[in-house]
Length: 113
Image 1 (tube, rainbow, N blue to C red):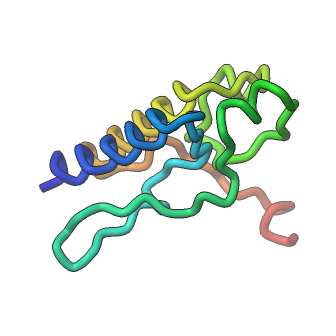
Image 2: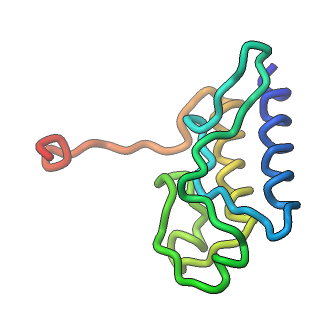
């Protein structure tokens, strides 16, 4: 069942990347994948998505979720369709292991904000 869900998400990503111009989602994570009544995955939250043309022309501010962002995007701001593939790799890791791929420890200063 998990593999079928991941295959469905990969097809959604392939559809986005094969459009003209390609669409980069920028925030593929487990929280943005919902399942319908037939257990078909639906990729949600296109609020920070951009086309590849837009990403090449402008310096986009970073958008996405820490822990899921590709290193080249996080450190250098380089955004490509492969950034979504990195996001999806983190999702695959989480789905197959049933564990979070990263750990964020809340500090006292974070809790008081």
